[in-house]
Image (cartoon, rainbow, N blue to C red; front, side, top):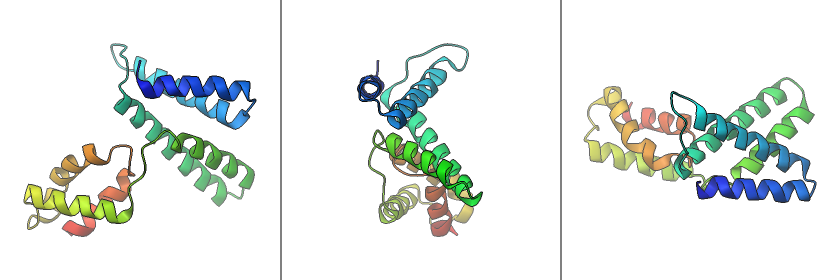
Length: 152
């Protein structure tokens, strides 16, 4: 079992004992998403820590988007619940990259691939090089926007 998944299970037990409703329900939901990812596809498999971080990232993104939607819809109490869940998930993700760090990574990837003069045609090549470096540490949309800005 991956260390991160083991830590999630241990923290779930602690949250249940402490009667922390938000934390326990969020951790249950995350562990269910991890289990679903493990059994998805033709063959069940054990997720690595990197795979678990990927699941956590997508769950955190869902919470952020839902909080924004609830805020826009005038449902502040639901937005606060989603934001609280996102905070719990964020504790298990690696530290997020700043905009400057993303820009520096994009600049170095463009230099390494020699894509400086190719324009937007090179976006796939640059994104392919950057994705493994930023997985779980930056939103893919923010990275893609920075690549577009630098290539365009």
